[in-house]
Image (cartoon, rainbow, N blue to C red):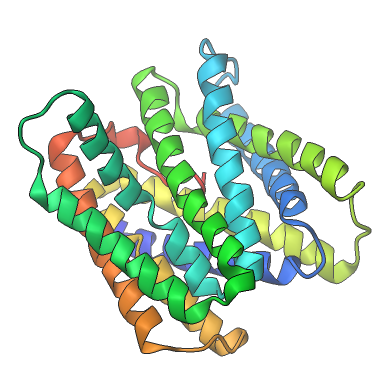
Length: 300
């Protein structure tokens, strides 16, 4: 299967995972879903690494810890937002990570004393936040504002995790090992948070267990497609095609959850998609990351 087709399939699978997360949120806490998502990911990565004869031992455990802290926190906030907000809104806010990356680049340039700033990056950041304003204002009431902020922060932490994944790639860590330790971090953190905030795990029904399994299976299958697409395709094309996940989520939200369609929210999503694509293209010219580390940290 060609890389663009794999990328489209990956975004569809991730959007489907979002549907399962939203349905599971009626039964389980976000941290609990993250825990089971981590367990499925750990088991899958352990099997794949064993099949390839790869060791799970690492020389940079501290880097994996910091990557897991930012990535797992982002994942918890993202799943929380999916459970509380319209599906497309939660997905879009998380996909702000490219815009946050552009903002980080601008901030770094300022700290380094750059005499000139890239106005195109500045425009992409402003465009992205204009989209956020349009999405949050018409679709969220005051009680949902905190849920929207959770989704927004998940995108910022996702960008931070992306930087840490890039650093791990440059340190020579294979992707399967990175994903294994991220999944392990999610399983451990999810269990601890659930124990503290929920008083323990919820009882399972066949329906609930099926949803949890589906979250893990869809996420893992999507990750395999994503990894293969980046291995054989053009990174920038793949990065831009990732935004189809918002479109698929928008369709799922309208069909399954009767999410409202407002012109403000639609324009806001288009602005964020445009800003993300622009920021991705410009960022690749400024500081291209290693090819083997380009995957969404939340979806890893």
